[in-house]
Length: 175
Image (cartoon, rainbow, N blue to C red; front, side, top):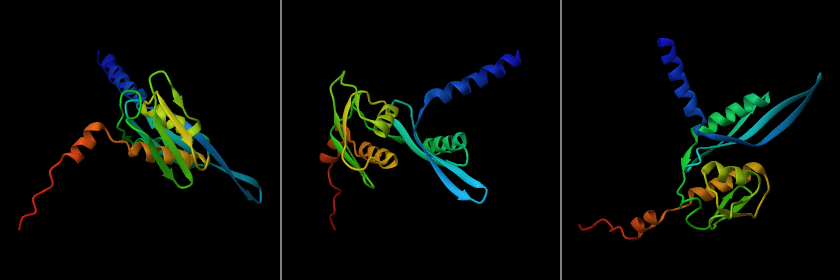
């Protein structure tokens, strides 16, 4: 009977793992020429999210592809952030900038879908946004686009956040 309890507890641990969806956005291969030939190293850009408003980005480097993906996934899980959403879209239009990448995100009505490409789509789907319009305005570098999308998502504010800032009373500064 203890055997079945052990397998049941390990089954619960494996059920928690698929909570996050991970997407490999880009794998970069770099070659170093040495006396015996070429030595390759790899870098993977990975996006991890729970499709309920949390997302993280990681960049892993290693000599083999599976190892760099694993490192990128670990880093992404450490960098998870909570994003303010309104249903299956974003509360308002926003523009994110990172390095040369610039992304414009606009809310869309139900049934529109995710109108985005590459790294922007990966981030938006990992967050759980199903209806949004996007436009890439700057560089098309994968890392810059993903970081610009994250910058845009971090600027999002809910109606409650804005109202609390707008109607909060300033602290009394009487001497």
